[in-house]
Amino acid sequence: MTDTALIVVAAGSGTRLGRGVPKAFAEIAGATILEHALRGLAAVDAAFVIVVPAGHEADASAIAERAGLVATVVAGGEARADSVAAGLAAAGDARWVLVHDAARALAPAALVERVIAALRDGAGAVVPVLPVVDTIREADAAGLGAIVDRAALRAMQTPQGFEAALLRRAYETAGDARGASTDDAQLVQAVGEQVVPVAGDELAFKITTPADAERAESLLARKEPGMREVADIRTGIGVDVHGFGGEGPLRLAGIEWEGVGLVGHSDGDAVCHAIVDALLGAAGLGDIGGLVGVDDPQHAGAHGEVFVRAAVALLAEHGWAPVNVSVQVLGVRPRIGTRREEAQAVLTAMLGAPVSVSGTTTDGLGAIGRGEGVQAIATALIRRRPTPVAE
Ligand code: CTP
Ligand code: MG
Image (tube, rainbow, N blue to C red; front, side, top):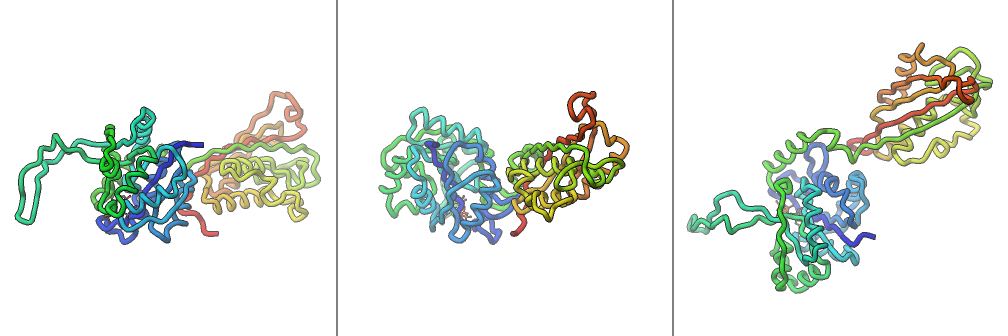
């Protein structure tokens, strides 16, 4: 049980970004701002609360799932502080609470850890800050006034961290006046409590204007694609064995071979079956036994292709697509090398992603080595589809 709640406020309208959708649901670099924010936080050990505009709750739950986390989703309010209050009400009895703007979608995990570490060191309230780099002047209707000494200024970022009881007290004390605040730490200071600054991070800038969105977009594009998408990639393994002595022809790797067939309720195509288990395993969707009822009379003698296509369809329903599969066949016969290209082409067409096939003998050892059957070992790489397929 984690002792930390992480409230991600995403209920703003995004007027200044001007995309015509609530800002957290605007897309940059192929995903919503909310999804980028959550992906960056997914490794944090906390109970997640996401606050979104009323009506966007289901959308936000799906986005959270895609980002690899389970979250409580609640509707926000008129002002940012109202949204934080709604998040706090759903934060349970965690000892510490972090409040983070979804709009700071590129905030690095190290920043979150810095805030949590300061809380564990005994701080009641922690805020990441950065020095101000621009020259700042006061301004009023009459024009520009005095230059403010920027050495004395700090820009506030999120996540801000609090003892949950302290933040609740600060919000209760502020009452309706909270509406004017865009900084939770300020409300804590208003009840006379100390706020500890920690170093902020330039990557935690708030996406506010179209120029900010462009900056975020190019930063995301510059990251190694593999690293950026790592939360969206899974691997799986599958193994299958069938003995020789079947009544039908020898079917393996989706094609027909000379010689005695394999025993199995279906066509005994160990390569297809291993691929199915690798795909399902990668997506956490069980194994071939639970797929389409391989024991069904209707699947007697069924080609392995039926199961591979069913597995790919099930993955798609859950928002996954194969990236590639590699299979190794262990056995004395058939000799994979003689028809490798053909087998690879057939399996690749079946899967809709590259499949490579290799073969090896086991140096005469064991039942496979004595030629009593074949074994196939498959590994699959799968990725999140950009948009989940509708049911
Ligand atoms: N926020 C919120 N509820 C509100 C207002 C803001 O949850 N009623 C959140 C935003 O979703 C954002 C963060 O607070 O993650 C910081 O607010 P801001 O950058 O001002 O976002 P918006 O209010 O959406 O943008 P704008 O002010 O341009 O409309
Ligand atoms: Mg705002």
